[in-house]
Length: 252
Image (cartoon, rainbow, N blue to C red; front, side, top):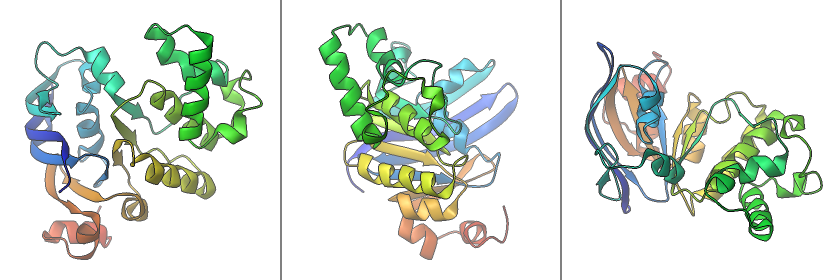
């Protein structure tokens, strides 16, 4: 496996009394796409949110174990969570642009981080929108409301907004599930392009999408990691019967 970006060691997570993740250990390689698959409610999204401590925002959450990014445990007491979430960006299932212009959406994080030089902000906007493969579609209407964009464009804008603060890891929680096939295909092409620069972890219910976009696939079931391997191996010769049954549609 290529150089490891994230090491997860014996991670368990509880919502109050309910255990959502059970003793999960896995390595996420740098500049690759890792897909998380499994039936609804199996812990995929909870695991994804554990990688940038988004679960901290929920009451009564308790975490055991370690999540190391570049060998530093993100759950240690001296971690700056705001800085962590800058390094580990999140794309949600439903695109969530702010009710502001396209330009203001992209520079939102940069402004918070104290960048106010217009020339620099202009460069960040152009670079981020180009990286998110939407620049040509919006360059003539940067000061129009982002809410006027189509669903697929809004999702790519949200990706640009995440890229603008220069993250190292991008988490995607079913980023194309609300989109039509053409927009989905654009998001998948974008993922393929972005992995040259970023480490990407994607939750998807779509088996074909996992097979098309990812280098590694992890199968979750009832809060446990059943197995993780190269995507080709998981889809052609998984080591666990449970994985084979899920991928072939016999359950889930």
